[in-house]
Image (cartoon, rainbow over all chains, first blue to last red; front, side, top):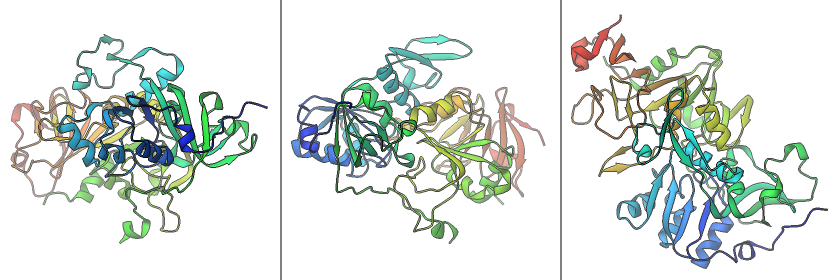
Length: 235
Length: 210
């Protein structure tokens, strides 16, 4: 039987996170975020964090809770719209923000996890994103983008087993598998902690080799940012 | 009469070949989704990891884990698939997507697009736009023809920070449909009751193709 990575709760899982840590946080907006881990970081009140996340929360929710408590000093993200806390702290220079095109952000994270040091991409060529970066022309001009690493990744999955094999629901997968690969320590919370073998091997979205700690989460809000139904669309 | 937003969306929809794949940006392009007809057989891609988006869920089918790039609840059709962000952007960057429709702040005759920041005033971030403009086979930009101050947003040269260089293929405004080619806006359709002078685009970067 493979080793068990199960820990009791978010407190045990995040015990080693200290001030100044670099943390990747899965999710697209509020979809698929590690709610229990974020609340634990808030309770621990660790400071001077660097976060790598597509949106860094939204309107006081998700990672924006940590922004409100002034725990974040640097953020890598692709989009700050709809996140007034981040926009305000970025403009007042309390948080240093590196805006990264979304596909490049994802690929820089994936590269870190898979041992690729850097790659050339056409994305961002001829824009502010290209400033200071090497340009090389293949069929068209491309810029050199480097891998993005982290100390910790906090990930939420629908199902996971004791080895850390994960299964994500619908579009909640987004950045999580790449972040799990790119961090030194990957911490996963799940809605359902299942027996080994319960996720069929061919349906494993992320193999457990990338996971260091896993726990049964709880009290999920699963917030929806914009609820629009067919009834409203047709009216 | 200028085109309404729905009529603009219809002009965009008329640009799609049946059976193709389409990514719709946030803002004005989301309206395009509602104007697509089932017989067009389009596969709608959402950058957060969905291929096969099909409209809105009914109130008892809503799922917080099924959203589009605008973080709005959506539904999927049979044949749909879910995947991670790297695969999603691989589809985009790898040239597998036929069309992308984005909003814009400015476009110019060289095919440059600006839509992610106004220095000193507003920064939303580029999201997936920089990847989309460089990856999709055809980029259609949907924007209002004039700014709040009445300045034409179709320029000789963008002065806002660019999202992509020489990437725009078509532009749809409430007044007209253009192709962008060889340093010019090529006028393909004009909204009824309008004259070419209403476009306020310099003659040397405008060509009437009708």
